[in-house]
Amino acid sequence: MKMSSKRKRALRTLVLGLLATIALLWGAADLVGVPWGNLLALLINAFLGVVTLILGAGVLVGLVKLLGKLLEKD
Image (tube, rainbow, N blue to C red; front, top):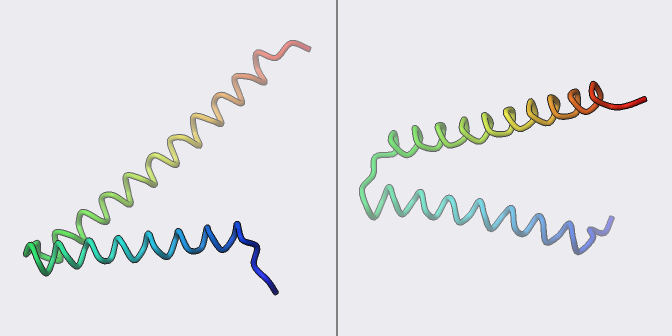
């Protein structure tokens, strides 16, 4: 099965982003001396922040759609 070029670019972007994140974490921990526990806590907080934003956006979209249906003229 052959992957499309669009899919290859998306996969390449994902892999390069993950590698860049790992390199930044390694650099912060090894070169600068930030403790791994602090880095892990920051990563967890960032992940929870992104999840909160996604859930909040979903709720807002649902409310806008509901409001649109309620105000729709028949």
